[in-house]
Structure formats: structure tokens, C-alpha cells
Length: 247
Image (cartoon, rainbow, N blue to C red; front, side, top):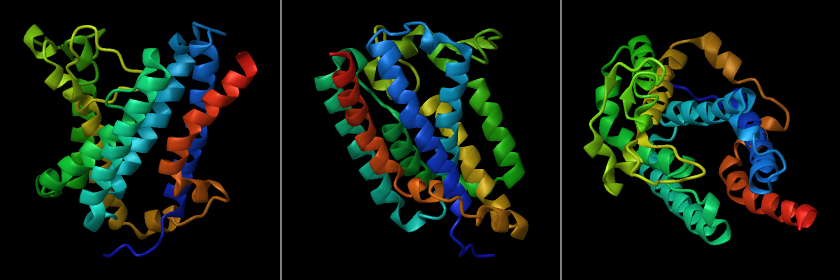
């Protein structure tokens, strides 16, 4: 079955995520960079809010990989380009909050990697692919802390040499002293991307799911189609507002 409908609901969910991201980053600037509530970022609610935003973007990016198959090479390269631009700009504007291998670089690399890996993933039964991807995601969830499994319940401790090279930092093994205000390494996040990728055949085979995903959400569905541009301009705008308010 070929999918020909525009999935306005998916655009709408992405639009909702972009609205939440703009608000989240503005509050981050106010509470953390300008010190109004230094403990805000460490709160459970803040963590869950942030995770919900990034999970949404990554799962949707994996799902729509299929829909943009012919342009994925170009899309992956463009996302990496803009990710590097964000790194340079944040390094100049806010060195203490510079972004290294942030969400744009991750999604760009995941899109490119899936060009090589999609034939392997397409051979996996969709439900098994989704479940297996999520298991692997949680298995590698705290790889940055040097363990497999959740940090509170580690299954294995990884060797220290993995964390001594800058080259391995984008893969999930940060070197000593590494700091980034927006760090999304390939591990564990690629497995969340692959979960979205594996969900596509489930959507493809279900007329009911397609009908649901074709529902348009006013304004949010439109915002979802502009997400990359909103992402690129929102932080300078938020920074400018904060400068007016607090300096």
C-alpha cells in the first residue's frame, strides 16, 4: 500500500513539540543562564518535559525518513551543516553554553546512517523492530555514565579507554571535561530514531492509522512544516528578549 496522504497530525505533533521547545529554551535562558532559578534544570518535571520534546522530534524523524527517501542524502547533509552553524554561533555568543553535537547534528547523522542501514532494518518484522529498538535504547540509555543499563541498575561497566578520545564523543563516549548544552550522541538516540523508522510499516499497513494521522490540527500542523526554521531563529530571539529584560 502506498501512502499518498499528507500526515497533518504528525506535522501537528511536531508543531506542538516546537512550541514546547521554544518555551523550554526561553525558560532555560531565564532560569539557568541568567540565574533566576538555578535549580530549575535539575527538577524532575523539567527533565520529563525536555525528554518529551526530544523524543517526539527523534521518533518523528525516524518515521518520516521513508517519506523523504529520495532526498535523505541532501537532508542529512543540510541538517549537519545547520548543526555546525549552531555550534559556531553558540560558541561565539555563549561559550559557557556552546552546543556540540546537538539535536540537528544527531538527526542529520541518523538520516545518513539509515541510508546505509535501512535494508537491514527493513528485514526485521516491524513490531519486533520497534520493541527491539526501545530495548536497545534503554540498554544504552546511560552509556555516557560508563555503563550499560540504567545508571541505577547497571548491567555492565564499560572500559575507560572508550572515554579518552574526542573522536568517540559523537557516538556517546564523551571525553573528560566535555560540555555541551545540547548533546545528542548516536548512542542511545539512534535506537529511538530506528523505533520511529520501524513503526512506519505498521502505519503503512493500517488504513485506520492513516486516517487518524491525516487529521489536521489548526496552526500546529502548519508550524510543524516550519520546524527547522523555527529552531534556527528561536534561540537568538530568546537571547535578545532576555538581554532586554535582564541587562
